[in-house]
Image 1 (cartoon, rainbow, N blue to C red):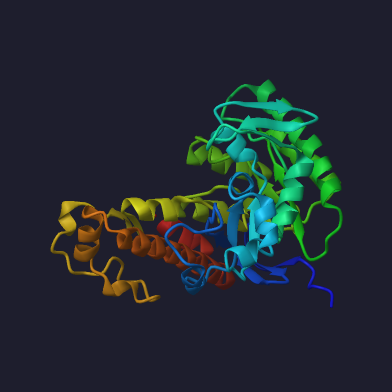
Image 2: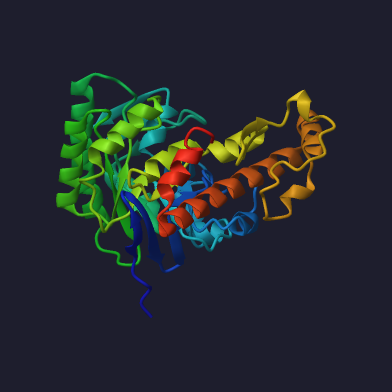
Length: 370
């Protein structure tokens, strides 16, 4: 029996903000969607069952890290990434290009071979070409595969960004050829070009000619301001294919997400809710709070009275403050789960307001609060 083909449809628009549905053979994903990050085949401090209870419908995992540990062959032998980590949700894997830039102390970019770099774990040399990145992701059996791109560090040097963008387009062609045609899986292209409008549009034009199942924006969340990021989105929003999902990689804060949805973005991922949860920072509808602060000693109110899911409100700020200040593992578990749940509540509220035609009011209420 043939597996259900990957598909996307827009259900409702409120100006540029879109409410849609990504259809996969593992289940549907309501958009705008937030993907919790399961870097090394786990969303840190959470079980997959708990992740599902937050109404998460897709997670992201990381090609670079899984290539280094435990290795794609080991995961293949276990039946693929879904079986390996006991996850029946759709999984998107990134290409590894960002980590080559951000983690490796020694890397070299070769147009033909790809990225040549030393592992941040043991210094072992690796070669990650577009073909190898696709081979690994298909070996992991991910549902949405990302092309191999070069993600340069933030710079205002036009020539550096231009050359990087052109290389990414070359690698995009090779990635598409290596992927072939797999109807039940999707391959997303990645728009590069830094903060330069002409380079972003040139990159997008080239990717559209190659024809991908979705289009991501990369090279952001690398140190630019929120205003700079929004300007990039404003410059490109009218040119993105209307019938394909749009994914802003590595973003971001609740405010980033709200502002990006206003500019037509459908999909997001970020380590912020999980990483913040492990360090005591909680996201709530009244803003952020650091539960480790002394002001929460003897505060027996719940972390967020608006939270209706997972019985998270039965844990007081007083108790959570105690857990963090005594380095108890349960502290990271509870606050991470709270933050992921908040992000999914945020996405549900965004979708509701788009459907009701009130997204602008929602945006104006929360853009500077969250």
